[in-house]
Every structure is written in C-alpha cells, then in structure tokens.
Length: 130
Image (cartoon, rainbow, N blue to C red; front, side, top):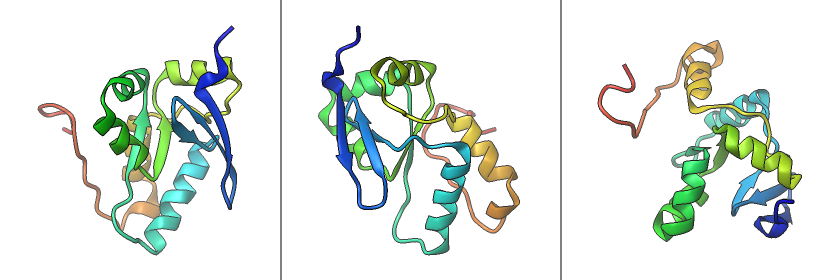
C-alpha cells in the first residue's frame, strides 16, 4: 500500500485543499479551472501562473529546491499526467480531473469568454506552440 507520508491536509479559508508531494490540489474540474481563471481576469492582480503537474515535475521538485519553490508559488496546479491522477487515487487524495496543459490552452483559445484577453506561452522547445 502506498505511503501516506506524502499527503497533508490543510484548511483554506474558502475551501479545503489537500497536498500531495507538497503540491496543493483542490479537486479541480475543467469548469472550476475555467471559473477560477475568469475570476482572476475580472480583477487581475499581478501574474497568474498555472502549473501543469506531471510525474516528471514531481521528481524534479524532489531534487531541485528552486524548482520546487517556483512550482509551489503558482496560483493554480492542474493534473496533467496520468501518473499524478493514479497517485491521487492510490493515496486517497482527490487531485481533481485530469486536465492537461494542451486542454488548458485549447480552452483559453476557443472559449468565447477568453476572446478579449492576450495569451502568453512560456516554455517548451523549438516550435511547440505552432
């Protein structure tokens, strides 16, 4: 059975959240992700960073404290990798719906609610965004 030492529970003022591998998850669905982004865009304060979480991110966080700090400073964490979704089920942590970075970009670029906003893509290699 998987060890529960990686799971922590904490109470947020607005909703319960659970941490797995140090990453806070709120059991997000594609609709709640959409709503949270639109809520931020209605009154933006600084940069809103959304980090897609996959097993490679979790492994790199374990060995790179600066990388871990950057990931944890993101305002939203979405479940990108199947491995993260499976780990959540094994550990009993409701990490939320698997919603990949590709799903996120597709939503932002096709949902009419986002038409008046600019999108910046940071990261990737070569011509990934084309």
